[in-house]
Image (cartoon, rainbow, N blue to C red; front, top):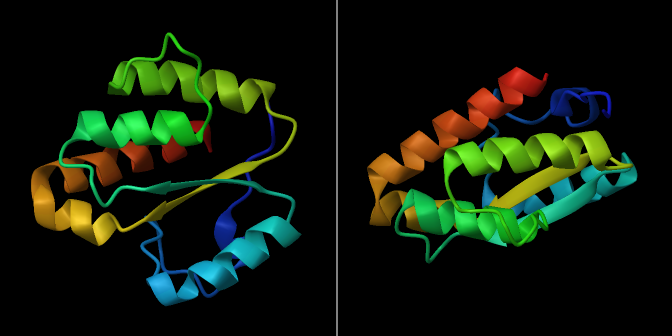
Length: 123
């Protein structure tokens, strides 16, 4: 398993977790992450109206296997495998999350919360 890298050590300008970054800072963030050796998985969730759609996009961006089903248990299993098997640290950059927030506030808040729990469990 890769060592966990707290992002604020390489990008001290980031807000506290969860890292909700202004879209204007995405280019800067990409540059910092790549310079630190991260592989970037980028997803556009602007069209995601619920958690299942969000998790489907996330699984696709992370290259999850065909048997992955877009639910939190499946995500937990596959992200654990990915972290164990990946040779480099991985960062996920989610674009247009404000659109998902407007489309389904509950799904957005729950997704952010559950992703934060994943971060805490692996860190």
